[in-house]
Image (cartoon, rainbow, N blue to C red):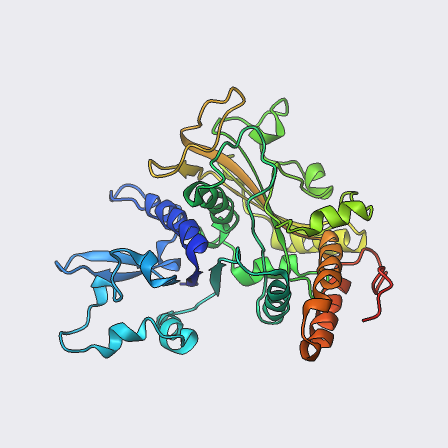
Length: 395
């Protein structure tokens, strides 16, 4: 069934996941005549409610501070324990993540395609961020750091102090970017491993960035339409997609980069572009698509894989009114969304700057290893055939 298991780690990650699961629930259909375009078995597992009726439960493991769970029980009501058995509830609060909590989901899966990790890093300092990045780089197929952009377009109006608002914006981007992995139609569905292969096509480039653009849900695909209201053309894709909202964390390193003259557009190596709400297309010819990727790779053009779905992003009653039209009116019901997951040369500069900033704050026993790991990562994102650091530092 190509199951995907989700890990939710931290308060902000759980806010984002709440929007994500609310959106997934909206895709369920309750009529024999209606078929959802989403394969629910990928993210949900079947079960029986206490009254014996069939129901679905997300394939997810949730972690947070104990007080943040509110009335949520330690053991899900669908899989309650018998009275007198106190060990099982306590086990859910222990640290053994992989063996005790995640392993049961993995073992019951027919053909698991991957683990989706939503992790809150708001309080991680730069030194810890450097450690986390180097470890994730070694273990994860793709790492996508996320943050709410410092500067938003006038068509996005949210309360930056509200986690419900900020997580809603992130959820729209994440849910839309991963939509191809959940489609029911096998000819249009993509696996997480295949998506990772496209992004990682130039080498060990597993740190990607996420962008998003959106438009009022309108029919039509005419060339006179604004780019926000139509699917991107092949020419636009070949130049490297630049959308309105970029979710790459800036930290304090972005200002440092501008001061050092790194303000030209980065070279895009590869990109996964998902467009939803613009109508379905015939599936790509795989052989032709692969041949095209080889040509683009040899010509130093972005290696591109694009997906299209008629399924719009639903704006539920629980979703805050953060998306506006050009007149400042709140968009309702649904919107068209385009997302881009991409690897580009800016990662090299950000990693080099991160290394320069944190290297002296790391203990001597870890300094050389973390410094070398960050530089090896940065080397994978250099433009052309250049290699090594351009900072001239020797730590």
